[in-house]
Image 1: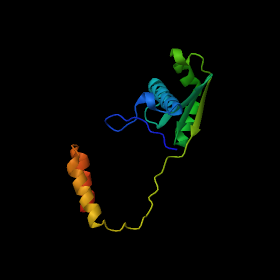
Image 2: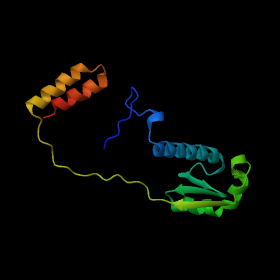
Image 3: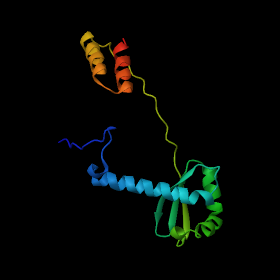
Image 4: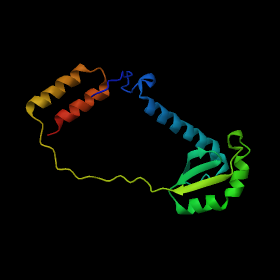
Length: 147
């Protein structure tokens, strides 16, 4: 079963038509970004970390570096004291620091695709002329030119 959702002119899904779970996830991610920006002045700027959760009295931070995690844990008392000056963190009693693996992008080798048929090339060229979007038309023409 396919669910059709209305799209904005730029091709993205309108907010009111997103599935509820997706809206909740997007709201949660925005909340975490806001918390990260709120925490940023209190924690080392030279380290790679971000807020990944705030539950009860525990603020969870993630970093990809073991050294950064050790420093955050060691200076936890100092950071907690500073963070408590912000009303949203007034009840904090603990920083939880986790080390996560950096996301690595794996290059997958594919066999070359067969060349386009003459009919497919003509269809792409014809389609390119129908769109008012210069970038899309240019992309279609580039695809048609590949042999």
